[in-house]
Length: 154
Image 1 (cartoon, rainbow, N blue to C red):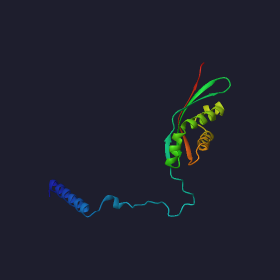
Image 2 (cartoon, rainbow, N blue to C red):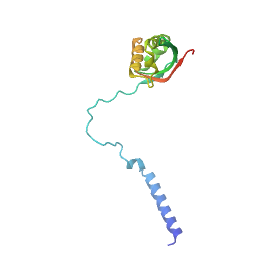
Image 3 (cartoon, one colour):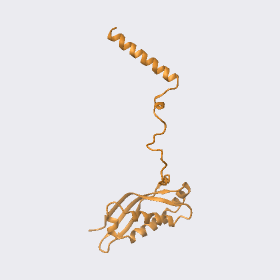
Image 4 (tube, rainbow, N blue to C red):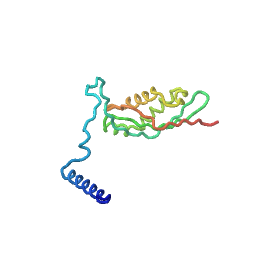
């Protein structure tokens, strides 16, 4: 047999096997098991809560000072909420939420606000501030998506 005949025969057999496999309903995902597990032992850790809805709040600009210098903080926040109705409440009360967040930032020490990588306590305080204004539903988490602190004047 020549090389051409051998290659043609190999190609023909491969095509026939592919067609038969396709018509028979056999596919490559059937070769891989549906669930892969390293251990069958049940986990003793509680499962994390599923992620909720996340909405972006309008940018907040707050004046702060350290006694010698004034700064403006521009913060963009995203909040993870427990249900869609909470998002409606936040949108309706965003002016009041902005004012409370500005007041909270004004009371924070400037050195804590200037620290790289915002502290967990700041995020917790933001979450507590927003939750205080919501009669129904809760904010699960607050994410700082943008943070800019600009000195005013020279």
